[in-house]
Length: 319
Picture 1 (cartoon, one colour):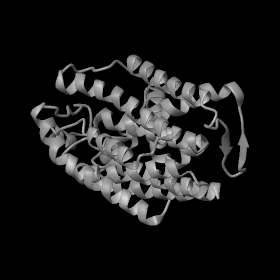
Picture 2 (cartoon, one colour):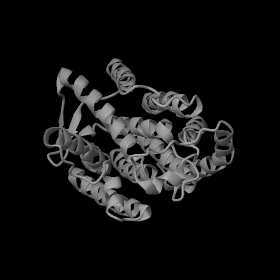
Picture 3 (cartoon, helix red, strand yellow):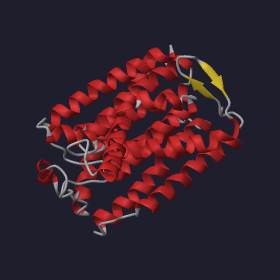
């Protein structure tokens, strides 16, 4: 892609997202779509109760408008949009039940997992039925391109569902998940550019722009939260970007913060069940640092820095 087109796409996407906030946030307030804060979470978060959630619709609307304007009708953009919006829909329904209908549980964990697996299987089915879409996997560092046959199906389902839920767990501090995803997508945009995958590059740039506009409202102190609507959509977008570039194996590094957060929850639960002791003061990991006395903004900035370093390491692993 030409540098001028990249810059124009980025700026236009950001502006549309910024403008959408002027419409979406007041509407969410009218719906009384306020976030409920967990009583067992950090006490400093209790003041955030009532902040509008479901703000992920802001960047979903933006990305849809920008893709329509781009007139890209490729198979890749269909997969990227489907994954982003299908997971976003699962999150939206869950958010709507919880915050608008005021039913505390929303989807059960089992129902949400089934929905996520079904979406992942639809993505896989489409990929297998479309000869133009490659199902190989690149092994970083070794730079090997392999085909793992039928194992590709359970592997990709695991990657997609795992990534979606990891992004969801990361969405716990103002601006954290949106900022981490901007950095992660920036890495994939650079990789897509190097590989000549213009559609994937454009999608990453458009979503980065939309997230920059959203981050204006989501930074500390947040005027809106993305909710499951946004976090599940971002997980779907990031995972399919990696799959289309044949790079799902780079995700644990390039999306390292997502996976560190998830690992902290797994370790905490396993340790408590097996030993009756907690490893962290609170999980996910960002809450552990808050409990140690770090300000929320410090945790976010440090996590941004770590994510940037992990993306630089990922780039060196590939090129």
